[in-house]
Structures are given as structure tokens and as C-alpha cells.
Image (tube, rainbow, N blue to C red):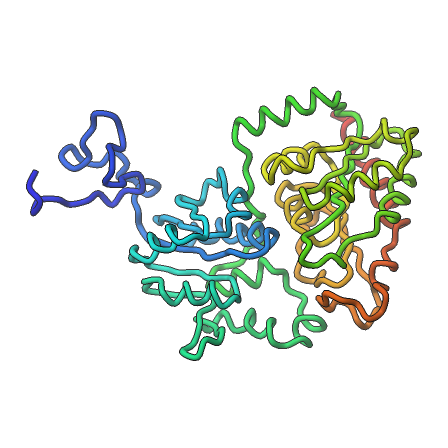
Length: 390
């Protein structure tokens, strides 16, 4: 084949580096994957870098995205810490870690659509650099200020600069808002987080290791959150009190969940419960990474959590979520009719998103532990009844 005769296949699998199939030459023999699912179609780049929970939430756009662009190739760039969230996602063709090499590659691709959901200077600067026919979300203006790239991003943009809108008036979920930002039809689709076959096998082995009993109700406590907003955490003492209040119910099994930043905290909770209760506690490892953490959470029927990545992960895993809120915006969270939200009603300063509280964290003191116990008990009875019927 001559250079002048080269016509690269419009195929997702073809890289130009090696054969797509062993001993098969796509250039001379034709593309084997010339179907809607196999063709490159529209090239779409999603920029979603910051906050693990936000990256999980933004996966809720993927079903709508593929509905609008059925023949398409989806690229996604995110921070290294968030990258495992995207693994095994059936809607994402190429995922990239935010580094010099990835940015160099993406700058050299001609995209049809760019979607930047992050209102950060570096994400918007990168969005400016991308060659795309259409841009949605956020970019930088010539003076380095963040601005909307399209009309439908205006509501999301105003949420960032208008406290009254964000804290008092908005009643729309983050998923609905990001759909509007990207010009997508909102149909309240779930987050997308899929386990690999190896992870499913890991979960089953772990269940065997802990003598998992389907007749019992497993209540996960996601005890911490990112160190960026430490005041979003329930106190160690509140967790101990809450777990003790649930220990009287024989059908419940308590599971301690968390990431590496929660190791010391979980140990304090575990030790504070005393030896008599520790035998009924499943103390999951906190240092095995995000994907293994998701595997441990998956054994739970109920997850009790603050507004954190763990909350979003529980939503993605379709658990019954009991989420309590203090300084963050509860109106932006959709539990998809699988749970309850508790927030400090009547507290004028909440939500606020402040890193330092001038009022001695009243919003945390106001968490209704009795209500959480009641909700856990109520759902556990429903789950037990369904199990007996089956």
C-alpha cells in the first residue's frame, strides 16, 4: 500500500500502532467493526477533574450523552485519585489521567464536542486549548476569569457566584444541573459504576471470609470524608453512640467503611465500642484503594454517611442511603428514592461550605441520631420481610 492510498478506519479500536485483530490488516482487508458501536463517530471529551464525589455524580450524564450522540467515542480526563472511578465503565472509550502526557495527546485530537464541568482555572484553561467544534460548560476569558461556554451553562455558573441561589433558592440536583450545563436531556439516570469480573469474585470471597449471612441486614458506616472539609464529619463519639443504639438488634451487622484518611478515626470508633461489641463489627481495610473500598461497601444493604465521596459511591452502588448534612447543600443530592436525607432544619447558617465554623458546629450537634436509628430499623424490617417472602 502506498502512502497516498492510506485511509485510516473510522474505528474506535484502530490505533495505527498494531493490528486490531491478530494477522488481520484493517487497511487492506476492511474494518471488522464497521457498526454504530464500533465506529468513532462524534469525538467527545469530558473534563471532570476535581472532587471524587463530583466525578461519580458526573457519570450520570453518560446514558443521556449516548442517547444524544449514539455513534460516538467518549474520552474523559480526570485526576489520578479519581481515575479508578472510571474503570470498567461501558460508556467511556478512553480515560486519561491529568498529567503532561495526557494533555499533550488530547490537544492533538480534533474533537466534535468538549464538556468541561469544572469551575477551576486550570480545567478551564485546558478547555480553551482543546480543538473542539462545540464547547459546553466552562472556559476562561482573555483576562483569566472563569466564564460559561454556552447559554445552558448559565444556571450552573450563577450557582457559583450567587450565595442566595446556591444556599437558599436552588432545589435542583447536581445531576440535573450538569445535564443542563452540557445541553443534555435530563431523565434522572443513575450514576454509572460497574465492577469487573475479578472484583465480583473478590466480593464473593470476602463474603465467605466474613461468614456473610443473607438473612442479616448489613449496615455500613462511612465514617469520614475528604480532609479538605473536615467539619463535614460526625464526631467519633456520635458514631459510637449511634452504633451502640443499633447493637440491640440481632439481625443487624455493622460494617465500618472508609478510606486511608479514615484509618485512625475508624480505629478510635472500633476501640470505643468495647470488646463486647467488637465481635459484631466488620472492620474493613481502609488502605486497599478506591476500588477495593467499593467492594467492601457492596456487601452493605444500608449505608449511613455524611456528604462525601462515600455517599456518592453508595448512591452509585444503589444502596439504601441515610445521608446527614451540615455545612453542605442537601438540595443538590439525589438519592434516587433509595434513602433519606437529614439536615439541620431552621438553622440559618446552614448550608455554608465554610472551612471554619464561628458557631461551634451546631449543624453537627443537631444530627438526629435517634432518627437515623429509626430509619435503619425501619428499612431493616422491610428488607427482612422481603427476604422471608423470597
